[in-house]
Length: 338
Image 1 (cartoon, rainbow, N blue to C red):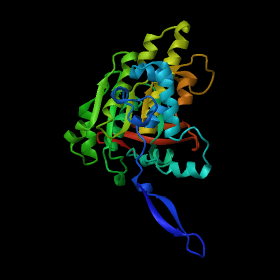
Image 2: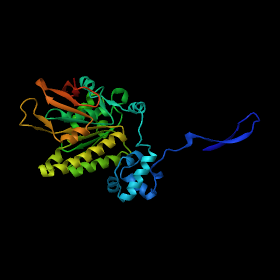
Image 3: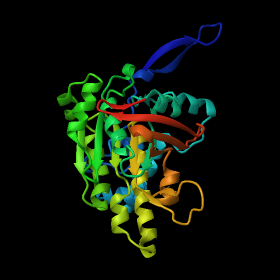
């Protein structure tokens, strides 16, 4: 709201009108403020899960046109307007980036050694890939993080809710109940706040990400789990002739998941299958599926392997700021522990 006041500008007290802007009264721009966006287009964008400017600004014209059922020319104009209003695309100082990093939260796993390996816990605004052989504990970590996310922030949780995309029919509500009891949460309340969907093929798996965007209007999403990331892609795109198509779709899927983690300040946890390299002469022949696409998209990569006495060894093999290292954990009835 603009107001007027008189200010003396010289010794003769000549009055001059000065416009004073009350910054607090200025509203944050919304998608309705975008060029070419009327009520009908705004409704289409919201139905497609685009509630804020950042979500629109990071899309490509073809993707926005496809998801919001708009023309590419209109989508391009909307995206350009969103970039200006959201004030992204410019360079920022390292100090400003450090301040932004203060929004990042850490989720405790229940095993102190694993948390220390990850610099205090699993980090929001990131994709963490956990890969290993069958029975190595990938799904157990997913279940444990799902339960821990429900805890308040001061207890090592994120105080939010969980979306779990299950591609291999490995989600078990009974296991969630056991782990909830292990940290003192009512099992029924825990199950109510964990939203599970079974993905029957890769296309369905990718569509479920759009469903998360839609449901996030009424749900404070803090953890998204895909267990496993590559199962359907591996089964449907067979042979070298299909490799490029598979990798392109996998890359798009990961990009959309990363957008969700940034917009909602959430964690994306993906489990991954492995293959054995028979030509390896020495060292561990186990290698994650997905190649460089998954490797580059993942912020943190954890390799799980079985050890003696029912223990598991978690090895951090990739991180932007942490050294490689190992943590020994156990899977017990209460969950993941040291």
